[in-house]
Each structure stands twice: as C-alpha cells, then as structure tokens.
Length: 120
Image (tube, rainbow, N blue to C red; front, side, top):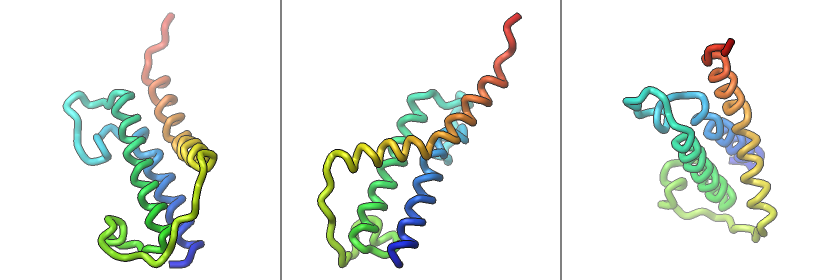
C-alpha cells in the first residue's frame, strides 16, 4: 500500500467513524436499544471508541503494515518505525476528529429541532 492510499483510507475511515454515533440509534451501529434513542453520553462513548480505532489504524499504517486483520491486531510484523510526536500533534488529531464529526452532530441537532413541537 502506498502512503497516499494509506492516508486516503485513514481519512475516509475517520470520517465515517466520527459521524457514525450521531447518525444512527443503534449502539455501535449494531445493537438495537430498548429505549429507542441513545443518550448523549452513549454517543460520546461511541465517538471515543471510534477515535481509538482510528488511532490504532493510524499507528499500524505508520509502521508500514498492510490493511489486514492480522496486521491491525498486531499479529504480524511491520517494517516501519514510529516518528516522535509531541502534545501538539495529539491536540490537532483530536480537534480534527471533532471537526470530522461536525456534519453528523449538526444533522442530529437539526433533526431534534424539527421533531420538537413549537411552543405558542
């Protein structure tokens, strides 16, 4: 996999996982909840788990691993090395992931606003 395709793949996965908690009512997009609607804290938890998965994927891609389940889980050797990062890098990554989640979050807020009855 070239570095360009790895970056493109990582951005697409990050965009999808950042918006997934806001655009569906299932837990981790799989488990149907009895209450029918997810609380805000559950959405934030899902968003954090998605961020962790994206971070794990980025770490494995930086090591030069191929996109396979064994490489993703650390079961195969990877030829690359990690570059040192400071706190600025991690701050920018979290904020970028939050910006990626903005379309889904705004869509959710707009749907809630439209469902609420108007007060006279």
